[in-house]
Length: 493
Image (tube, rainbow, N blue to C red):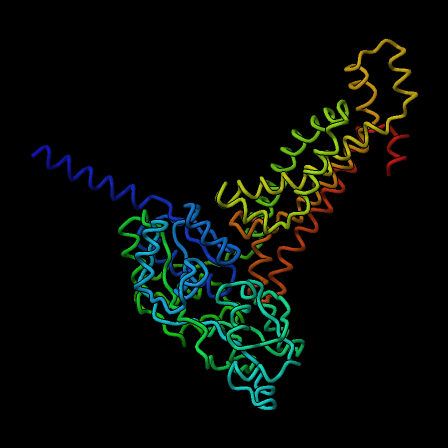
């Protein structure tokens, strides 16, 4: 009897621990991705799990790497994308065929489809379609004058523009655009054709025509949950509530609500799930008020200063060493310069396999970008100290270290502080991109605003970031005023 009670106790403890385990839900940075990820998160929370939202992940590559390296546990994906972009398989591969391939290659799994096919498509304005008799993608081959703008991800996907153009014999050279901004561009007649998802709410709003895929290039893009095999069994069962629960019409309506009714993704997802009886009713208070701005600003400050402090600790003494051994300076500065030229989003993506997503890779990237200005200014400041002053210090009997500590570093301090000041301002701006790897900060507003083509949301992140940069300038000006002698300060300023 005692053993039975003990066994029951262990089972209950196991269930309690499982319920308390935090499940990290990811989301790509586009409208539908946010809504579907909120549905997953809300279903898990309704089932008793603690959920950590890792939204705004930068496209398929970043999201998949985050899942593969266990930086997230689950996110919504599409079967066509998994087949063509991740597995590099023939586009006719079915959802059933994907399961063993994902399990054998990466110990990953997918759920049954949600019920709608969000295929890629090319769209044109209704007026243009009527005027140029555009009904199919093949018809584009007869109109080389058309201006085509494509989302950046679609340009280089396996199931994207390059292969589509070869498949249909299209000769146009498209321009890269953010997906949310492409609709605005086509509405303002700055472009004539763009890529779209068939459930996008903008298609009906802007009176666009979906060109028929008459040569059957695009596969089916059935929406599914994409997760690690280690996801708790009960969590998998909860997520399967979405199986067959969403139609294309319903998904398009929810996308429209986010875009044109300015409703939050969480509110939209909650309303849909409650109406379907998939979760119980719960409060979904908006998270876009002053408290949210302050919270994200604080995260932004933390990212900036952790990276800046690390860069100072490394670059300042390294600059002194290179000043003492100038033969090494060119090589080190060359390496630091190369790091500075790597595009921010590319560097963040490259760090995911090494450091996952979130704060760690963001701080590493910001640290690398802050190195060059601090290192270079430290060296320049020391090298440009007037030689007669060095000679006077030597004649006074100062040792090399004493001369460095008492004469050279104080005289070089204006230039050193200028480098730190530059690095700080660079970090404030670059830290907005940390949102693409789930690190949070003010970039979350900007990335979400771009996805929704919502200027007010973009400004909600951009304005505090700009103010933060201005405040930093004033802080460093005050530091220079306090630490640098007046005659040197006036020379620099």
